[in-house]
Length: 94
Image (cartoon, rainbow, N blue to C red; front, side, top):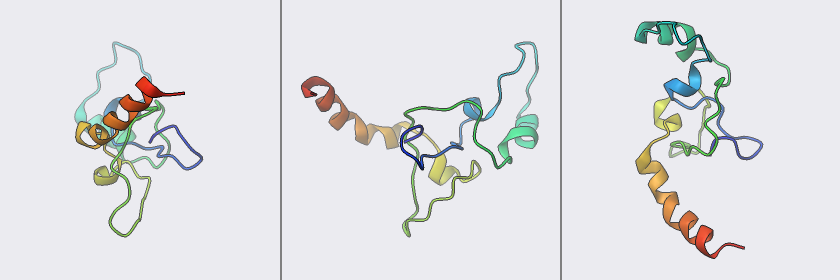
């Protein structure tokens, strides 16, 4: 889960998270985002706090690299597994 713990993912495969804040009149093309931001090996400038990403592979390897979408893509089918337990905790929490 992004933003929680000492070793949480810092490079989720998410365009809005990986593109820095720029002027609203700046035109951003798909190729521009690949060249300028996609392949950079640095934390995303916009943190997706709470996003649940794919996680490690079957050998428990996890490379926090934006290009590795199978491990770093925040998707609804991954997040759906957490909704039930979190809803239960929210209703019957502390």
